[in-house]
Image 1 (cartoon, helix red, strand yellow):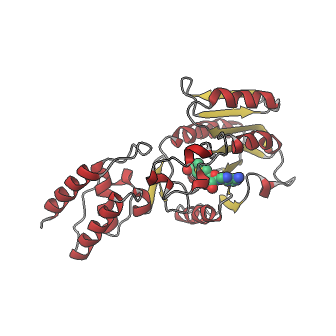
Image 2 (cartoon, helix red, strand yellow):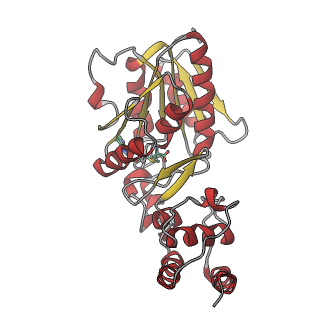
Image 3 (tube, helix red, strand yellow):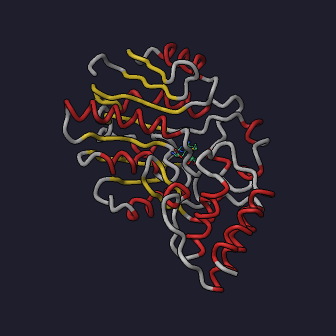
Length: 300
Ligand SMILES: C[S@@+](CC[C@H](N)C(=O)[O-])C[C@H]1O[C@@H](n2cnc3c(N)ncnc32)[C@H](O)[C@@H]1O
């Protein structure tokens, strides 16, 4: 069968049987098929990087591999885990089951982190960042990739996620500007070397209540690490610790910024206010807060 015939046959199969995940709006039937096609051709690319590219010819062996990959996708294996790639803020990253697949919604946090870095870099050289709960390293990697004078300490409690972040650091050739280590939140950084030295703490913590995690879409719960979602009984366990522990590390110009779940904003703002450690608190967007930022000083 000609390439076009194979493409159309598989597209029809996907149209009939594939449900596009709500939390990955960048995946369409066509872009999913193209990404699987490139993976079968031995040229792994994320769904966002294949759209404009012409499809390569496939050998008989590659066509049979493509059929297997389509079947895996139809059986619920997430696309990024099949292709081994996920794009985050336009940066291509390695992705596999060792860590959460970076989500489009986290690009809101990424965009705000970039704005803060731009502002910080106007008043300071050599900005130091913590990417806590780093997963595959997406946030810290994009910041280090975007600003040449930034140094990032990334950390995660999961040794598998740390391993993947390490591979991503090498993949993006950022070895001299990001360190990653295993750490329960800030525990690995409990030293005077880090106190009051960090200009930006960026974090996408687990914030879903344990009972909701148990009911998540099987495509997520059967494949992605539960630890990446589970924020304890009401979802705020990790966020509460971060709010409590971050001030010790923030430099006089420093900001804590983190993602939260839809609807959690007002309660979390109250938590920050009650802690009495922060002088300024902001939130974005106004109507359905997904990112909170807070600073312990009035400096910047
Ligand atoms: C929602 S994922 C975020 C991953 C990545 N930063 C992103 O934006 O896609 C949360 C991450 O927090 C990590 N985590 C959970 N509990 C933690 C803890 N106590 N200390 C450090 N990391 C933790 C998980 O392993 C997971 O990688």
